[in-house]
Amino acid sequence: MLPILEGTVPVMKSTTRGTLAVVVAGVAAAVGAATATPAAAVGAVPVPLPLGGAETALGMKLPKVGGELPVPTTGTPGGPRFVRGRLLPQDVVPRLPVHGGLPGLDARAPLAHVLDDGFDHVAVDAPVSDVRALAPGLAADGPLTAPKPGNAGLPGLKLPELGVLGPVLRTAPTADLTAGPGL
Image (tube, rainbow, N blue to C red; front, side, top):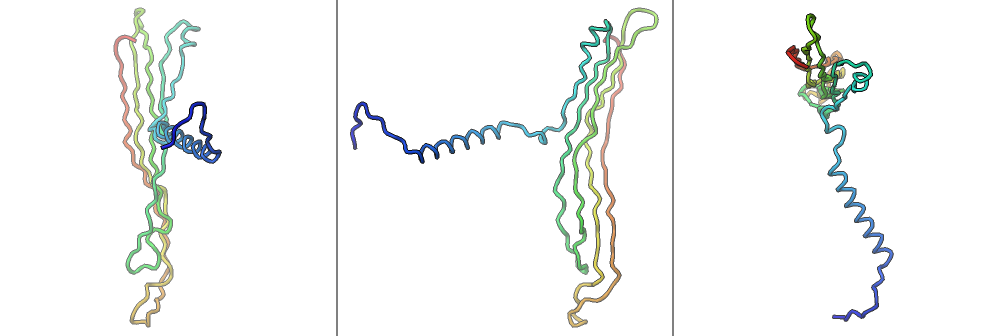
């Protein structure tokens, strides 16, 4: 064991300092990436409509309106599926799944009484609705059959096939319309 002398400071080599700096920067980047939320992870982005200044300037109650815009995300397309008796895979251009939503709305407006100075309210609440969609795809088959053992292992001739797979859209929107006393 070597004794540590007073007044001496060990000198760190530049390669050691550079390696240490890279390690510290990598750890900081990993911690920052773990705490940050990517935009695609958020289902919907709230969009408020600020009318407070207009209420003050006009001296009257205005509707309160806010909305939500969904963030669409794409899924992974299905891989090729080989079917017995076909030369090409079943879906030449696979369908691409897209997940998103219909925009949401939250609106509340004052409803004045006709005979006195009171107010009621009417409100519409339409939350973001989930939308699942599949983009169109293409199915095709070539003009040759699979190789046949009775034909010396050669494929036979047939008519080529081509088909367009239509898009699919699935959603179930909901909304609430309410009217009641007070603002």
